[in-house]
Amino acid sequence: MFYFVVLQRGDSALPDVEDIILLQVSLQETLKGIEKLQQQKQKIEKSIAELASYQDILILYLSNQNCHLSLESARINMEEGADGRVLSLTGWLPAGKEKKVTEFLNGFSAWFEFNDPVDGEDVPILLGNKKGFALFEAITKIFDLPDYFELDPTPFFAPFFAFFFGLCLGDCGYGLLVFIGSVIAIKKGPVSIKPIFQLGMILGIATMMAGLFLNTFFGKAIFSFPGFEDAIFKSGGILAPLSPLETEKGTLYPAMTFSLYIGIMQIILGMIIRAINRIKNNNLIYGIAPFANILKVCAIVIFLVHKNFMDLGTYSFGPVPIGVLIKSVPLSASLWLVIIGIVLLLLFNDPRKKISARIGLGLWDLYNFISGVISNGLSYLRLFALGLAGGMLGSAFNNIALMFITDEDGIVHYGSIMVIFTVIILVLSHTLNLALSALGAFVHSLRLTFVEFYQNVGFTGGSKPYLPLSKYK
Image 1: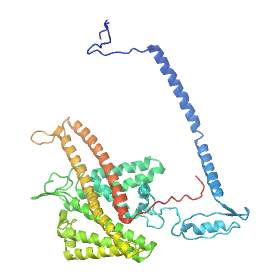
Image 2 (image 1 turned 90 degrees about the horizontal axis):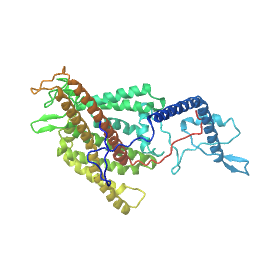
Image 3 (image 1 turned 90 degrees about the vertical axis):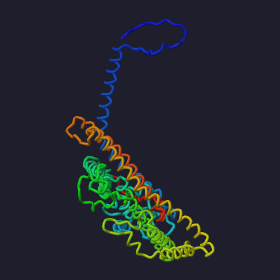
C-alpha cells in the first residue's frame, strides 16, 4: 500500500483513485463503545428473561379479562323492558347443543324458546366438516364463509383442490418432499398450526399420485414410454396414464385432455349444487335454470367429442375409453340438448318475474354462459400447462447438472470429483423449481375454486363466523 499527498487546485477528482474517509474516533474508543453495547445487551437479555417468567400469569390474566369483556358485551346487548325489571337476550347456537343449553337455562327463573333461522336473518356460520374435509376449511375462509342458507362448498371442492394442486406441481419427487416436510413440521411445530401441515400432507400425497400419473420423479421418467426410454423402470406404464407419448404425428399429451375432462366434471358438480341450493331455499321450479345449463354443457361436450377437439374423442384414462363411451351418444343429441337447455333457461331463469322479463334475462344469462365456458376451458387447461412447465424445467436442470460428469461419448462418471457440482446444481435448481411450482399450483388451485367453481355454484357467502359466549382458555 502506498500513501501520497496531492496538491491541486479546484475540485477535480484524481482518476482511478479511491477516496478513503478516515474515522472520527480512535480504535480504542471504538472498542470501548462495543464493550458498552455488549453490557447493555446483557442487561436487556436479563430483563427479558425476568419478564418471561411472568408469561403464564399474564396469559391467565388476559384470559380472565377476555371473559369479563365477553360477559359485559352480552350484558350491554340485553334489551330492557318493564322499567328495567325484565331483560331479554337473543343469540345463536348450533342445533346439536340445544339440549345442553336447555338444561343450563332451566337452572334459572327465565323464559326461553328456540326458533329456526328464517330468510333474511344474519346467521353466523360454524363449519362442521368431518375428518379430512375439515382441513380444507382454511381454504374456504381465505375467500369467505358460506351463507347459512346455502350448502358448504368445502367437501365438494376439497378433492378437486388437492388433485389440482398435484397436477400443477406434477412431480412425484416434489410431492414426496412436501409430504416429508409436512410430517416433520407436524412433529416439531406448534400445535396451533398443525392443521395447516396436515393439509400439506394431503397435498403431498395428491402430488405424488399426480406425479405417478404424469410419469415424472424429479424431472426423470419413472416408467419407459416411446420417446422416454431412459426411465427408472422399464415396465409399469399402465400406472402412468397421463405420461406424454411419442408418436409418428409428434408428442401427445394426455394430461391436456384429462384437464378438460376433470374441469367439465367440476363445472357440472357446481351447477348441481346451485340447483340444490335454489330448490332448498325456494321450490323445484327454481332448480330448472341450473339444470338447463347442465344440459348445454353436456351438449357441448358431446359435440366436441364427435369433432375430436383436443383428442376428447379418442382419449382413454388407462383402460377406460372415456372418449369412445361419450362418442356412443349420437351427435344429434347435442342439438336437442342445446335447444331444450336454451328454452328452459329463457322460461325459468327467474320464476319471480314475468315471461317477457325472463326472456331478456335469459338472453343475458346465455351470453354469460357462452363466455364463461370459454374462459373456464382455458383456466382448466392451465393445469396441464403448469405441470408441463415444471416437469420440463426439472428435466432441463437434470441435463445441466449431468454435464459436469458426462464425457463426449455420453458416458456418465458418477465417481468423478465433479459430481460435487452436479449435486449442488441439482439441489439448488430443484429447490427453486419446487418453490415456484408450489406457489403456482396453490394460486391456480385457488383460482379454479374461487372463480370457476364458485361462479357455477352461485356462491353467495358473506356470513360472519360463529363466536359463542364462552370461557377463554
